[in-house]
Image 1 (cartoon, one colour):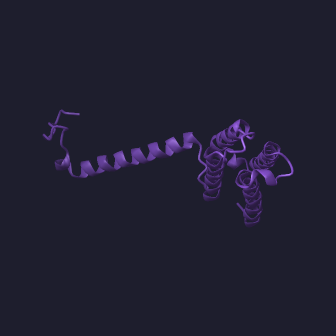
Image 2 (cartoon, rainbow, N blue to C red; image 1 turned 90 degrees about the vertical axis):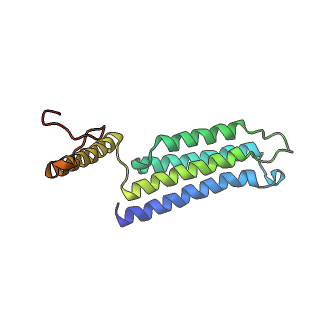
Image 3 (cartoon, rainbow, N blue to C red; image 1 turned 120 degrees about the horizontal axis):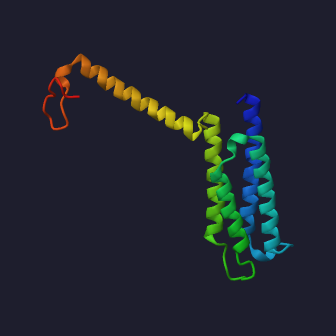
Length: 163
């Protein structure tokens, strides 16, 4: 990613962070200080957050992950199910946990993108298999150089006609 790309990504991340903070604030502030109902305000802030998230994921396709989408879905569920009518209730810790989990999933995805670690599962398996093959080939070539090091699973020396 170019330096300009990193700069733009940083600006977009700041916008995402501000949207997360604005949503958290709805549940941290006193309920009676809002001009709008807490439900309306929470849904507005959630909408703003999801718009920013969509913009960022559309702009940086590498950041589009099932983990981010799953965490966003969980957050939506908690916001929708929250009991806004009960004045005695404090904000559910589940809402804050959902906000933090979305932030963490997003952060992890950004880190992977910047580190160039976005590898498809197929490529990852191939890489692992290649390492396993290399390791096996290393042992085989070392054994051929030192045949006295060869032993069967039971610890005995192989006979000439053993595989």
